[in-house]
Amino acid sequence: MQKLKSKIAFLSKNVSDEELNFLSKSIGVNQDGVRLLRTSNPFNIDSLEEPLEGIVNLGKVNNIRFINRFFIKVNEKLEIGQFYIGRFESIRNRYYRKKRKLNPIFFGFVFIFEFLFLRISPKVWGLKKIYFLVTRGRNRLLSKGEVLGRLVSCGFEIQDVQNIDGIHYFRVVKVSEPIVGENPSYGPLIKLNRVGKNGKIIKVYKLRTMHPYAEYLHDYILKQNGYAETGKPADDFRLAFYGPFLRRYWLDELPQLINVFKGEMRLIGVRPVSPRYFQDIPEDLQELRLKHKPGCIPPYVALDRKGAKDDVLQSEKEYLEMKENSPIWTDLKLFFRAIYNIIFKRKRSA
Image 1 (cartoon, rainbow, N blue to C red):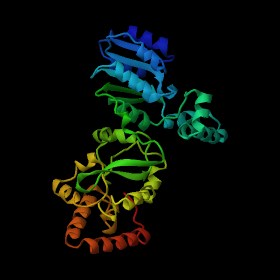
Image 2: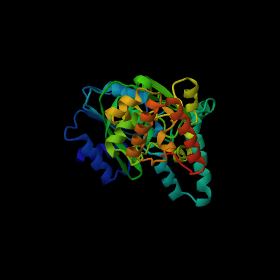
Image 3: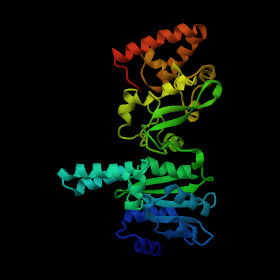
């Protein structure tokens, strides 16, 4: 314990007892094969001597220029089941840290500037080069969802995440080779894998309401928190601050009209759900769903039901049974009912 504390103190100043406890617990008894370092350069990972039991990096992820490249290098250095421990400061934690330190008059201006320069500009063509020229990739604003999503996309499974003194510490283990090559969503317009007619996986267009790489955390969120009454994952930290507004007023779903024009969806129909969510739907409803294309406006809106999971699934079953008998009239009738409920009854998205 004292040997570990000395190593950590050498690499990181002002280590708290809580941080030390997390690290010692996460590393375990066998410390001989654990490499402890503080770096943002993947070369330093590549040069680590083997054999390894695990890697601990006390350098913040926020200071890594090519984050995925760094995580992939860690993945390559480890065997299946071996661990990687790191840390980062989330946007939320940085916000509160700045708020405590700065004068309220200047705080808003400073944080808006930081958000635009350190968060937005790295994603904008043209500004990206200027950003990296000035900052060299240091002090990036990163959400908790993005960092953890990147880790999963690079072949790791999340075992523990703790917020200690405004810094998130994580422990992950290698479970596979990186899967980041599957083109993770990063821009404002995203395409998500959804189950279409006959089980075909279609790319559904939406406006982003979650942080980048959020799609890789779906199983993790469900494992941690399960479903909320709305039928969506509970306590979902992947949601961006503007996400609830876009979702409540259906704005995030407007790009689904592209899928309608492509013939993959209809205006009225069951929700296009992810393959993971589809597994949790009762088998009889799964069979009914696969016979039809999903839709932009879900049945629970037209039938004026609650957005709770059971109500949504029950409304979908009723709709599909009606559609079996009268497909055209059912869609026409429910379309106008939905428009009426949205405009006059102020029906909002779940």
